[in-house]
Length: 257
Ligand SMILES: Nc1ncnc2c1ncn2[C@@H]1O[C@H](COP(=O)(O)OP(=O)(O)OP(=O)(O)O)[C@@H](O)[C@H]1O
Ligand SMILES: [Mg+2]
Image (tube, rainbow, N blue to C red; front, side, top):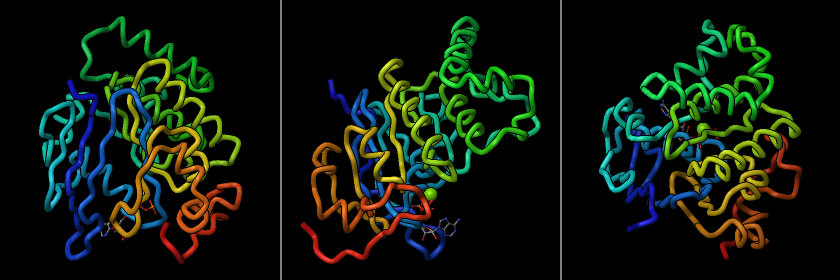
């Protein structure tokens, strides 16, 4: 049996005349954390939206656990075991923290499993337990990120798509969130596809990486090898700073390999 959970072949997506991704092929293997790295506007969010059915691709195909999910309904794709944590979190602000978590589990019938998973996410993020009865809209940005990730876990998915969890967070909080993402992967065996501008954090947390530029994948390798390649680090990933969004310098490509 194949160990490939998700496979994109030559996927193209556009917004009207604007081609956002141009023939993206990638694979996510069972049990790994895979990452797509790229600067503003590279097409990272578009890849995730196309996988989860929010955008229909113009070309190409997407297979999830051996099944063709290209352009299927987002609700159907969630039911197949794929959860998407969107960029900018998108929690339900007027629902309590606990109700947000239960929304994540709305398709599940195993009440005991749901109760257990709520305790698990409270273990990962104790602040969510403290704030369980409070409206989610009152949480800080970092706490909302924790809630959005936790809500995805509540669906008990096979694969989580994670869109820039570091967005707007301090380096310290970003580090904490990444540690939990790695624990979710290791402890629950959940496969994760993470897109990030924060190359430092993503390369350290992930097993396999793709670098996206202008809607195309320009390199892929194990993260171990990507971390070692000086030219990639310098020209694509801007890794001469501390990796904080906003301070990162995405340099123009001068040479390739
Ligand atoms: N709703 C939209 N309508 C028109 N163009 C869009 C839309 N959303 C994204 N785009 C364009 O598609 C391209 C890819 O955008 P996308 O949001 O996928 O990039 P990204 O890599 O996620 O960037 P960021 O790191 O800033 O989140 C960009 O050129 C962007 O301007
Ligand atoms: Mg984005």
